[in-house]
Image (cartoon, rainbow, N blue to C red):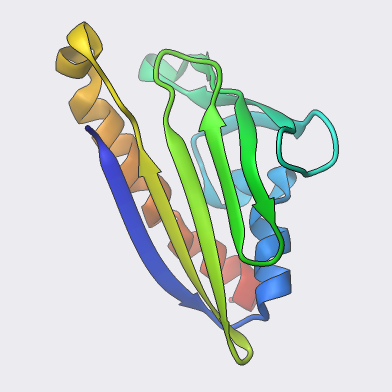
Length: 143
C-alpha cells in the first residue's frame, strides 16, 4: 500500500497554519501538480473540493476530495472521491508556542491490477506531496 508521512516545524501560530492548509486556493502555491482547485462550499466535515491534478503526459486527472475531519486548529483529513486512485490524507497540527508542528500523512489502498500498475507512480506522487511541505513552510514564514 503506497503511503508517505512527514513532519515539519513552521514558525507561525497554529491557527494561521491550519487556515493555510485548509484553504484550497493556497494548494497550487505549494502543490505544483494541482492544475485547478476550488471549494464547493465552506470548510467543514463532509464538504467537497473539486481539483484536477497533472497526470501522465501532463493531462488533467479529476481528483475531487471530501473533507472527512475538520477540527480547527489541529486536524484536517480528507479522502479522494474521484480519479483512478482514491488516497486518504490527514494533517495534524500541534502548537509549540509560536511554532507549529505539522504532520501530513497519506495512504492509498490499491488492489488487483491497480496495485501492480500504479503502486510505484502513486508512491512517487505521495512522496512529492509530503515534500511540498517545504514550499508551504517558505510561504508561511515569508521566505
